[in-house]
Length: 446
Image 1 (spheres, rainbow, N blue to C red):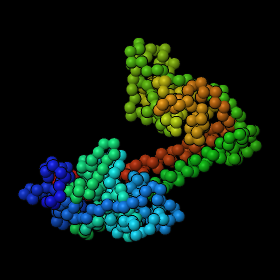
Image 2: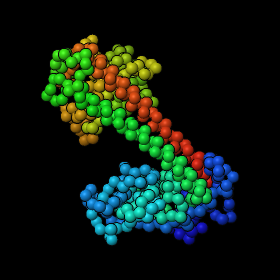
Image 3: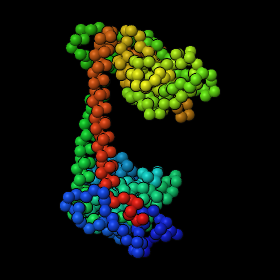
């Protein structure tokens, strides 16, 4: 047992501490690779017994300079730019190396301060020598394989690290706390095999993430060309069959369909309980029905505020960046349902394609058109039914062209949804694999 302990806590009281020597246990993961199935159990120890835990040095945000020659990593980048393995370093500084803390290949870094306890438990292995490591970083220089340790700390040990972190508004994680973290490890060869497996899976996830990003970028660029720019009445790109078609028409939203705000929530109102949709249910291009609430409505109210197949729903109130978030309702709910006044309903006229309207409104949300007409309270921006009705937008002159554009974007949306699902499945697979490739957290340091 390491002599270094969290002040005032015994090994039985500190989460993640190494077990006492008089209580041996066999530590084996649920899943082992063929060459290691008959190997010895994992060794139970503490992180401090296998590592020196150091601190980075300097590098304020103002010290980061893309023209600098010295590669550097600041703690905030672990949350936003890096995963478990760091091969490529993005930031540079002009600070002289002599005044910096430089990495050794295989160092594992983890923030020493952060906003939440669970977020601070974010580890990355630096696979390069000579990278400057900032002052808000704990640097774990270990006898263990660095990539293996990084995956281990980010996976099974994440909650143990969160438990020993201190603070509320600002959370701190000290070397003395990390030193006492209970861990287990197999032979160097098995460590490397586990790390190679997870690294390969991460490469597949990264490739799928790039495909998803490329699809989203393609759609964004296409929308900028298939819709006229501000002040113009013809798009830069038009489908062949509409090259000779006339100018797009500038019309108010309520010239293209009926606009209605939903019913105000009133839990003591007359009438039976009816399901209704609200802001939480209407996402960007998606209706989420995982949490549908009910409120009392009379038959007349239910008929007035009912949502029908083909209705376009928009968030009336949201943050300024999300106000007007839009999706088309396609009867996804198994029963009749209405809408709360947090939503606006656009019901297209016979000359308007609802799918086109939905895509046009989504573009208005993304390009800031809705934000420009919304009113801002302390924390919420309101689109407002009257402002939305009066908004003048350009529309293709024919229903056929509207439908053609909508079909193009719907096809892209389907590809993006499928790619998102594939990426989510890979990430879920990785989480499940990590749970099986490492011993249960309950066993290590029990």
